[in-house]
Length: 163
Image (cartoon, rainbow, N blue to C red; front, side, top):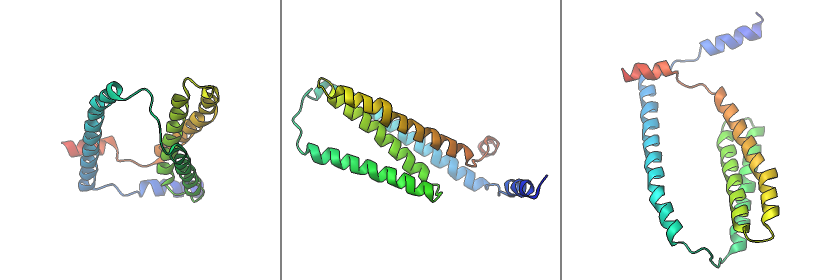
């Protein structure tokens, strides 16, 4: 075994074990976050049904240019932040990459759904299928890989707290 391998093993075994208080706090925050998300998801169902029933199928939009240019500026900033944080090897790149992926998916959705019934549908669909959605998928795939490298409390530690 070479010195580098020994150093890697020593680093992993020297990682401090979280205290029971820390694990309990993490577990409590996780539960509260999941409860909040559950309430929000359930609450959005009637709101979405209400919108489906009451919104007009057509609407004259004001500030169309400002809306789309603003959205694309936000997308540029998200991608630039992702690139900058990635170059700096900062762990916040995960948040920026997820944000960029979400914006790309939204961009594809709005481009395609707003182009229905127009001659622009084919270019919007092509851009979504060949650029926006693949890039979003790639970013999500990379984030999942980075997250899998993170150290998490073991399920055994979580079980010990529940006892």
